[in-house]
Image (cartoon, rainbow, N blue to C red; front, side, top):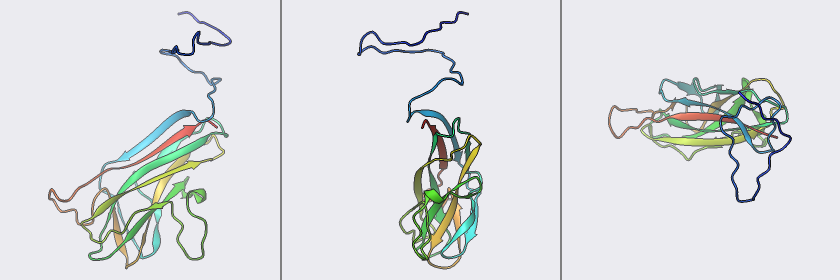
Length: 197
C-alpha cells in the first residue's frame, strides 16, 4: 500500500471533475460550512404506540420508538432535525387539531416552538382538523438546532391536541383502524443531520 501526501490538489481545468475513490477521512479533515457530515435516522413502522391526552394539553412524553441520537463532531456544528408523524385519534364526531413539539435530551427544545403568547400552547408544527376517528394525517417537521456540544443529542416528538375531551392519539394508524382496504397504516420518521458550522 502506498501513501500520497500533498498540500493541495487542484483541477487543471474548471470543467474537469475530481473524483476521490475509496478514501478514508481522518479527524483532521475539515469541510466548508453547510456540508452534511453525518446522518442518523429512525423509522417507526409499527402501530403499537398510543396515548390518552386530555383536552388542550400535551402528552408529556416522546413517542416510543421514534427518537434519533447524533453526536456532533464539533461544538460549532448544527443539527438539522426533520421528519414526519403519521397520526390519528379516537373521538367520534369531534374536531381535533393535532400538533407536535420537538424534544432534545428528555426535555422540550425551546427554540423549536413558537414565541410565548399568553395562554396559547407553543408547538413546532401542526395539521388541519381531523373530524372523524377513521381519518388520519401526516404532520411534517423540520428545525435546525445548535446544541453547542460534542455530547450525544437525542431528539424526539411530543404530541398535543386541542378541543373536545380526553382523546387517544394513535401513531401510524387511524383511531378506527378497521381491518379493511379503506383504513390505512403508515410510517413515521425522524432524521438528524450534522451540518458543518
